[in-house]
Length: 260
Ligand code: IPD
Image (cartoon, rainbow, N blue to C red; front, side):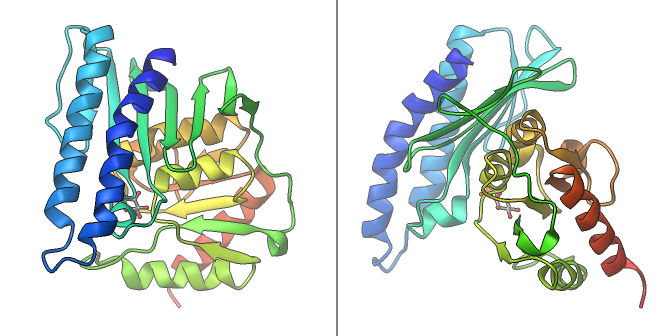
């Protein structure tokens, strides 16, 4: 965890400077697109270098680079250098570095670091989840009507949009509010911190959620696919919440998917 946190903090310094530059580019005719892609790729490379120096035999799966099988094929880092890229590109400070360590096919350590508010969410399997030094616990709310639920809305070119809208309609009708923050990693970290009572989203990549799922689980959330099945990380659709809310959300999603 020390190694992971040091790498995230170091890589984030440049990222925060780049974020400042995005605000200037926002108003330029060309826009910040290429600059952000370069920042994403550079951060990916920095994290690979920093982690590779201390654990040279581990492999990598990252959003911006090729998969690498390490000398030790049972261990790899799963990294998203900027989760919340669209936010970053628009000057919205809601983005994070996500790093997970997978050992023998299981994520055993993970962090989600939001550099602008300087919030380090981290967890190790069996050791609980933390925000900086504070132990995290999922919210205790049991009444769906009191909950704030996070989600991701399929956008441009994502064909699952109409099906998703039915799920959203059914959940929105029963909760106190829905939030679309633009970073699945932070959505899960917020569930771990009890800020969100639940989250659901489909169509995700392993690097978006590898660390966040461990955080939510270690803070006491029930974690599954949106159909209740196992292994959300490798299927890209996830539902996380405390037990009561998880059960209720599962039923609402199931109803929304039933042919009318
Ligand atoms: C995205 C974010 C977003 C989710 C998208 C992801 P990226 O990851 O997690 O919240 O809705 O599906 O692709 O591209 O910013 O790393």
